[in-house]
Length: 100
Image (cartoon, rainbow, N blue to C red; front, side, top):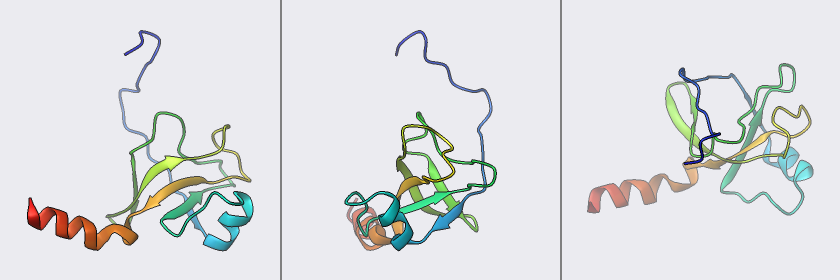
């Protein structure tokens, strides 16, 4: 680990809104697959950022996504963060857990 990398003492949390797949495809043409979901909050610029990759997207206490990538500038009100859509992997996760 590089000495200039720092991490906050407390976990951060932000309320974000899920963006429709159609709208997300318009924002990121050619980059969005059905296995992804976009979320952000343009009003307060809430978003995931560098260092958040692998973090959770939680809805009603259930893990729905995992932070994947986003625009170069965090909190861009026009460009939401992109997450792995875990709903697309539920069966695979359950089968993998059952085998192991």
